[in-house]
Amino acid sequence: RAPLLEISNLKTWFSSDRGDIRSVDGISLHVDEGETLGIVGESGCGKSVTSLSVMRLIPTPPGRFVDGQILFEGRDILALPEAEMRRLRGSALSMIYQEPMTSLNPVFTVGDQIAETIVTHMKLGRAEASARAVEMLKLVNIPEPERRATEYPHQLSGGMRQRVMIAMALSCNPRLLIADEPTTALDVTIQAQILELLRRLRTEMGMSIMLITHDLGVVAEMCDRVVVMYSGKIVETAEVRPLFANPLHPYTEGLLASIPRLDEDVEELHAIEGSVPAPTDRPPGCAFAARCQYAFDRCRAEEPPLLTIAPGRQAACFLAAERLAEGVPA
Ligand code: SF4
Ligand code: MG
Image 1 (tube, rainbow, N blue to C red):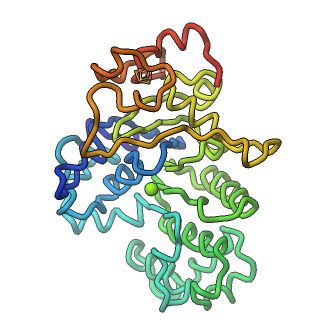
Image 2 (tube, protein in one colour; image 1 turned 90 degrees about the vertical axis):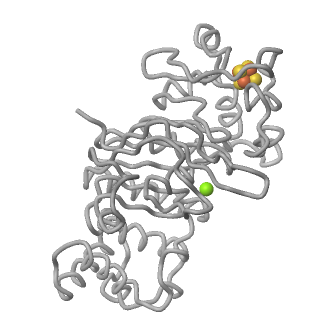
């Protein structure tokens, strides 16, 4: 069965005074039916540009698709006419963002906004659409949905707004939901509730999710498979369990070490030293070398290719096969 989403050798670059910024630089990945794929990495690694490329919401210029293909349900996203793309966005292909206020319109009630999406994408009249909007608010556990539907975004708490955005994104039965840091702006308790909600809705609605996050703790709770990005490229892919048990890329190891643990003081968190190299100014060799505790001469001269190391596991590190054989724990 063909994957629901298949990205091949995607390159999304941006022009700047200092030259091309290669935000996404030749990535290939897929999302299967019913699967939740996590895309993880620090900010600036290219994960949001990847998701915006799939939605075809990259401003061009300064952005441009230099190479590659994005197939969604077999359709070539980068070649679709804009009118067809608009029909797809918000229906079969839907997205939720970190900060709901940027995607909710402050001057319309939340009920009207959800109904508007439904009228646009499904062949329903106003009254039916408004009734479905209330149903959607109920589905995402908003208390008193009839009353809430008549309120404006600023009258709701942050967690409530995030639920409204999820209700809107799911109102036209998407096949693929892209969630870009959906809980990052929320406090821990609300975050857990939103993740629980997404898990339930995924099962009930049978959709696939592409979850963008910097937090491997979120990945552990939500995902089937993970893609780790660094400096515009994929450095590791694996199913969740083997990735956590035996990370093959030292960057993944660093991300795992920086997951906050409940029994640890905040001061004791291990962050990875250093930062992602500027995309205009990438050194030769492995992009992670300056921050890697295992780097050796070859790493600074030659770029490690992304190779299949074991069934379902890829990594771009000269030591990956060795790390697999030795079972290096996180
Ligand atoms: Fe570290 Fe070298 Fe592997 Fe890059 S290739 S992650 S520098 S060991
Ligand atoms: Mg981002």
